[in-house]
Length: 249
Image (cartoon, rainbow, N blue to C red; front, side, top):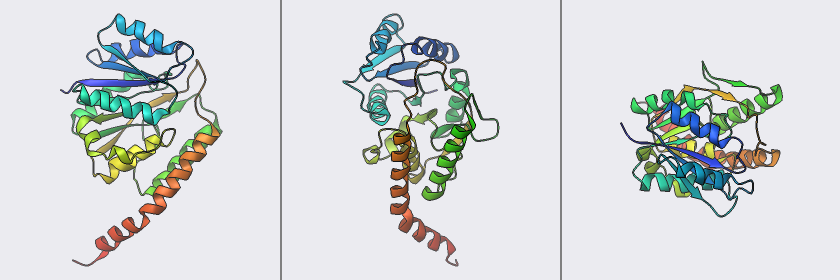
């Protein structure tokens, strides 16, 4: 079984971080945790250093400032691959991704998936404590991205994922330029185009109870605009593939 690295990006998550890490360590005791902190002014980075000093399974990657989720994961992927980890997990720091469900995602990777998506929108998945309008925004945005990019996956924007190191090396990550909300769609689209084996495993997403969400209307708009540009740029390629499939043999 490949060694697992759980990547937890942080910005002002001091109230949530200790509990999330403790739950990860309880759920998957052999996993290593990498906290990627963007110079949080609330002291999250210093707290992460204290936790790492008391547990050899915790490491901290300090970045000079808030540069976006995509950049944090890009640095973490390089760190994880460079340190020889075979499975790399994306997980939010606010407790919305349940560490207790991580063994199910890892089992799917062990069974042969290159990329495992923790999915809120497949049978068995769900969301707790979201208002109806946020559910509609998430489902509507995801449906639009699936349609315009030609992807079959039900949850294209979720951030609870397991990549194998080989999958990350097969994805042209230099072409993934999104830094915020669109990063997850961007990575999935490139993984899909690379022909990787991608499966969805149901998860329950739980809205944070401490701290403030980093999501904003501007971030969502930027993501949808990028998705639209990617989809339009890919139409000629998809049209050629459809014509080739339609030709009589």
